[in-house]
Image (tube, rainbow, N blue to C red; front, side, top):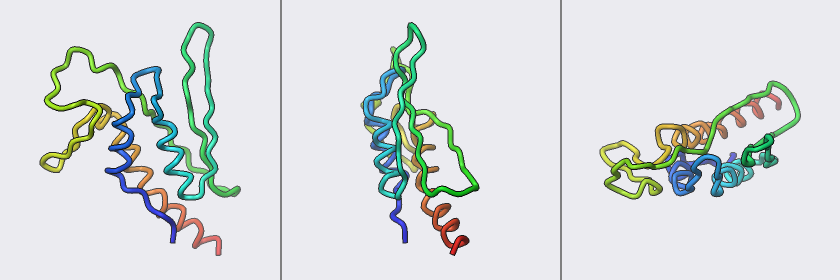
Length: 130
């Protein structure tokens, strides 16, 4: 049985990262750490165009066979700006079965959700190959 990822816990860890574009603030490492626990080999890569800040990306792979699954997402958020927050925007709050915090709707909670389903996908693939 593979380890699991709790989607809310992962979203909480991601929201804590003040990953305001182009700053990463550890968000990519949070994702990589979660995937490594599932057996993925993770490579963090940096890209930069002339005159721009470096941007981190993650390439994660498990196994060496097809089919391949590609998930393209982002862990950065726009600046908080002058918006009035009732709570710290970089602390995930659960209220009335909703999640509040910077990046919860775009797209830190979604990353948590997708990665929480990865063990089932991997397990299904492994059971088919045996």
